[in-house]
Image (tube, rainbow, N blue to C red; front, side, top):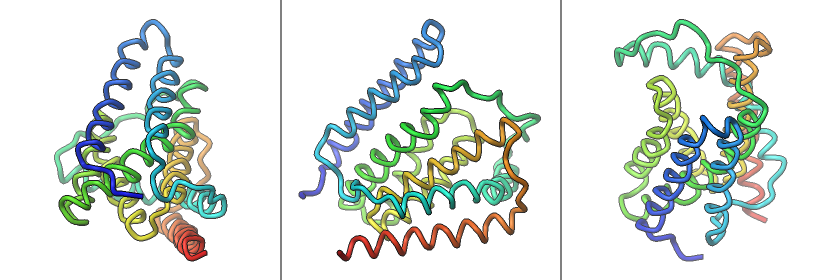
Length: 225
């Protein structure tokens, strides 16, 4: 499959941002249904283009990566706190309110599929062809982080973009990226609802690396077939 032109990848990104912005404007009238409508429309748009490499059924790597993402939340929080303080961000005084069912479904299902297909499956390879891998990783992570708005979420998204971008460069597997992203979002939703299991940052990082390493190895083995 030929490489996707950078202009096409950036144009698709702008179209997705426009759809999601329109959904946000409709939120006062439609509630969480506007989120589902916006994310669903954007996902169909992104998946409707020529299929990106790595987007094929890969259940085992996706499930392993999902477990890694879920387990890694305490480690991410432990890393974000000093990073945010160093950047001068005001500490959060409380957790956000729990999302409704439709919003939660988007955060755990459609959202990771949309964002990983767009930023890791399309934007990152297009930027890599134009600028080289290191700069492409930084720029694609920044584009992924910008729409999150809140300073702490933007910082978290940038870090996640670097991690998943590196994983995609190593494996060319979107299944690993989607699975990890979905697992991390699921853990965040569980934490907000007071249901996240108690894990220390060290133990969560060790478990997450074990599962994520297994997911990457499984994805690389699947590519050789």
